[in-house]
Image (tube, rainbow, N blue to C red; front, side):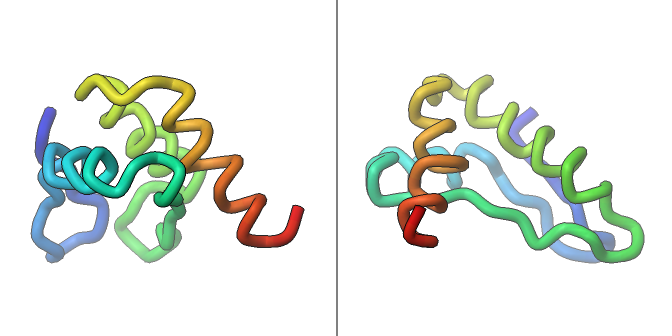
Length: 79
C-alpha cells in the first residue's frame, strides 16, 4: 500500500516518501493536515483516516501520529 492517490488526475503519493520526511524532521517538528474536499476525492474525515493509517502500516508509532495530527496543530493554534 505504498501509493495513495486522493485527487483525480494528481500523481499518487508514495507514503514511504512522506514517512521518510516525518522521520527526518521528527514528529515534534511535523504536523499533518488535509485539504481534501474536492470533487472526486474522499470526504475529508474518511480521507484523513486513510492517510493516518498509512504511516502506521509503515511503522510510525501511534504516539508520533497523535503528536503530528493533534498535539502539534493545537500548539500552533495556541491551544
